[in-house]
Length: 594
Image 1 (tube, rainbow, N blue to C red):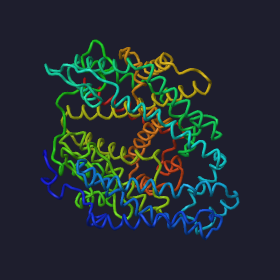
Image 2 (tube, helix red, strand yellow):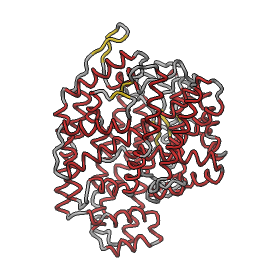
Image 3 (cartoon, rainbow, N blue to C red):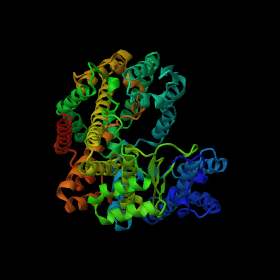
Image 4 (spheres, rainbow, N blue to C red):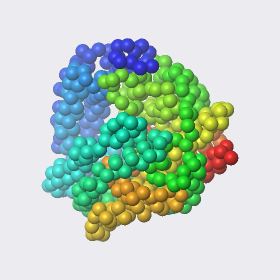
């Protein structure tokens, strides 16, 4: 159902922010209190060598952080309900400013603790009174080798204030200064942009896809030397900071900050190289099923099967999700049912509501989910996906003290994707319509193709470009395009035409300005598929291991946390399991299409 105004939507479809603050006046009251209380955190400066004082600081900081989280989440979510509401805009701006001020007051804590003797810090780690804070203290101790003098750190902070402009300038260029032409689709003029481009690549008419692809890339090609200069500056900036912080490479610094073993990255790239064959086979099958004489890069995102979708009302979608997640046990389902019934979720779209979907958790309250539900298969999977995030937060906050409840980005997509895989497996098992089954099999193959394979290709490109810079090789547009095209040909194989425009794809990827981030999408889906397969095969024991993983929060490094769930990313086994899953799914699709 389409709503033009939020007031038209029944209450049961709107999240209840009253669980955080009963009224906006209560938010104002808390804001006034926190605005005074956070300043007390500055009173401890120069006194952190006293264990009693330090513990007092940590506990006070926890309480203020919890209060700040409530203020922020309430303001953020209410602003997302209606981005044109001036009162909600102002509330969000106020809390954002408060967060900035608080960050400035507490900026002394890490440098001061880092200046303490190792013996003092190790004593704190071993002290049961500091058990809630042992992880952050361990991280601080391990990172001491990469902390510079106060003067050097100040200098680096000053450099950082403008070195981050590479990302900002790219965003400005990409979202405003790069102009896209209009194209004609079905006799109507369409203004090309990032969103419309993605939609047009799913158009059933190959000529429309071709026109959109060539027109879209034309705008990047016209600016390619500028974009290459920006990216080279960003990569060189990464290398400068890595050297300044006494790391041997940019990758070493990035993995150190995430507590990830380099063996994970190396395994990912090596195992992708060993599993190109099934991907190439799928690309060839796509070409055959689409009946194309020539398959192009712009033909990879359109559905092979026409007019196939599970169209159902929101309540029916929730029932499907519950059935799909049934292998996770009644205690898991009880919380999901509670979320559905007790307004943890904002369901329907309105013109001024934020687009997309997300999950956000409020400590001491519960997680919330934003949706913009439409009656499509994709949106059913979105419910399962966001519920995975919410349940990860729910279990982590239940299982860990506040200081250790937050999990690393490295594992952030595991629970959400695991839910999607479980739902998909359920639908494949229970749906009887052959055409719908074909669609679901393709959905899974494309999920793995775009997330596991494509993001691994991006990760390999990042590794190559940073290695070039660290060896003093120039990152010219020609050099970057050549390297990218080589990778594209290696990953996608001979069944697809590697259109000339695709060698410029690197120039439009914003994630490349956050060095060594994209590999986490690939390791995330690999971990999720392995866990889902174990749950469906082994039952209760695998479910128990998975729930232990969900409950770990940030109490361990993320690679060790995944080992608790039975996934060892430092070995080749998980990668082989997912490659086999891809092959089996492909074989099933081939069989149905005979």
